[in-house]
Image (tube, rainbow, N blue to C red; front, side, top):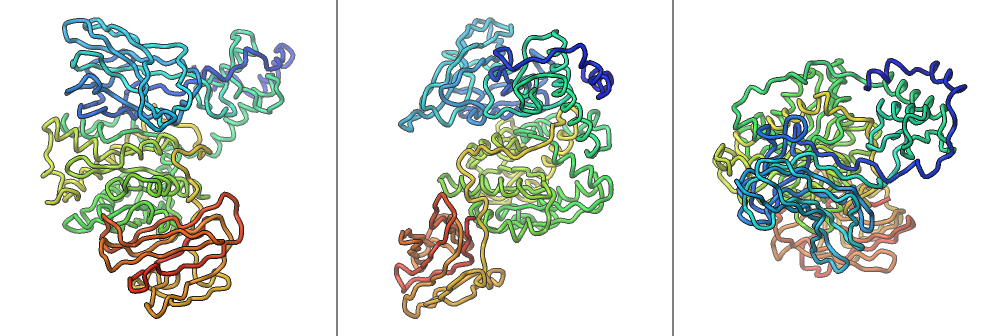
Length: 620
């Protein structure tokens, strides 16, 4: 169908049609309610579905309702164990949706199966709502569907999942669809699939020729509330311009054969939680294939820094960079910005100098082990992601979520960020935990001897999973439209403009009882150390919305607390924190919605304690 459109409709033929095609003023048959918000077919990945509870979910070709594959749910100990996926990025409270999925079970008897919504109600309590309930016959595909499901009022943190009511049988899921009103109308999206491609040109042509009486609002290319041939001309022009400036990846990646055991291939598949929009990564790979220089950066904690590998050459960052260099082009610059004991709070404050200033083309972000639950981590992580995505050189951003031996990880909330920004997520947690559960590997195969860090085997596994992501991203079925950074946020991205300022940038600076410089040479120009000589505050003025502090922290009574007063309002920042190892940490000290002059004063709460300020960041 797309080839017919591409070859059969040109600007000239479109202009010729102006004498025969009518114009239509936008009316009730131009809708915003039938957009395909989610289509999960499980052809190459788990499509962002994960296990709900201690069970397993795995992409498989054993059974399929559509095409060749489905999602297999097994090892269920409770009826609520099933497959779950975040829905906050495409569903919202009070809106109506057409939701469906197909399920298959072969227990030998009928099984009642349920499509459900998990959410938090207006009081913050977790609640559940039934979307669809059906009895699935043995060895037959059954539809779970609701054409007019309304999300409860006040619901937040939405997730859709499929479960059973009584049986603990294994089951398969395929072709999960959610249709409804999109959060934003994408210009050029004439058929409501939230993409802009030649299928939209076909839909617009059919509408203008009266072959179809349905169209989406995105078809109004010039915003004049009239659908006519000029909208079709503008849409075709968009394709001509985008194709003229795009880069093409070479290689027959659709027919690439993975030369590993079936068990290892399943681990690779489990690791690819989502492919995400592939436009940027394909662009960077094409850049490398053309011989241009490509900068690949890795930002994370000690695992990324490579401290648990036998040598730095064997860490996952270096191994995966070597794979990229060997596969796509030798003109590659390797940037390892991993720092032991740091979280995404620190990463967001370090990234400007350590990654973005080096014009990184591809940025891997790994903080799922070092981060914690809590607002400062969630907002910092999302802000870091958005800051990287918003750079002028349009870097490709890839999220990595690893875990501890017990499966501990911040993956569950980090996946919501991946969903919102349509990013790839490589799940070391799913690869390792599912591999261990299946008996394909052990923690000893992955770990370095402790309960957190991978050894050489684990680092190689992570690098191999990154290579698998590259190969899947290059398959033609995963080709994406041009990527645009969404305006929506999950937890908040207001820290994305935070930037560490130097002493020279501070106006009316008075050091008080603080000395310029720190015990870390990298932060001598931006940092201050409390001298324990009196307790005169460090004070200055800057312009912005807020202040964040980057400081040395440790779980030690010698570490102190500062009182930060901004425009008369005081907040405390403590450097004596649990789960820190004497390195860098960060926290928000002050924030206001509008930018203005900030009169800042920083004083010790107890002048007998130690406090090292590595940097003061201003949120613009």
